[in-house]
Amino acid sequence: MLEFNNWIFVLFLNFIILFFILNAILFKPLLQIFKEREDSVKGDLDAAKDMREKSEEGIARLNRELAESRGKAKEIFEALKAEGLSKQKEMLSATEAEAFATLEKARAEIKSDAEKARQSLRADVDKFSDEIVRKLVNV
Image (cartoon, rainbow, N blue to C red; front, side, top):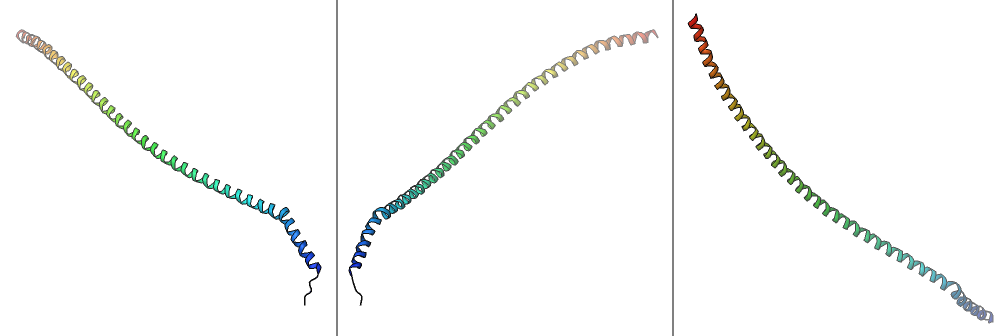
């Protein structure tokens, strides 16, 4: 059989006292440090998750704004293009009208000059015919 003597109680009492001392000095501070570290890591992970969500929201917002800006730029470009085409047509029609007026003026001048030349030639024809008749009569 197993004998229980006084040393077992002393050892048991020594174990209990040592357990409470080590618990107060070593185990509780270590558990507290582990808890703080776990909380710190969890807080950092939550902060990183929040930052990632914010960055994704920012990227989405920037993409939306970029799409809106591109749309506005396209509208402005189309408006300027249409305005340029209308100005081009306007200038072309003004130039055509000016060219037509110049052409009509030139035609009128040519017609006037041609009429003057005909009258001059008629006068010359009369003069030449008189001269030819005189030369023929003198012959």
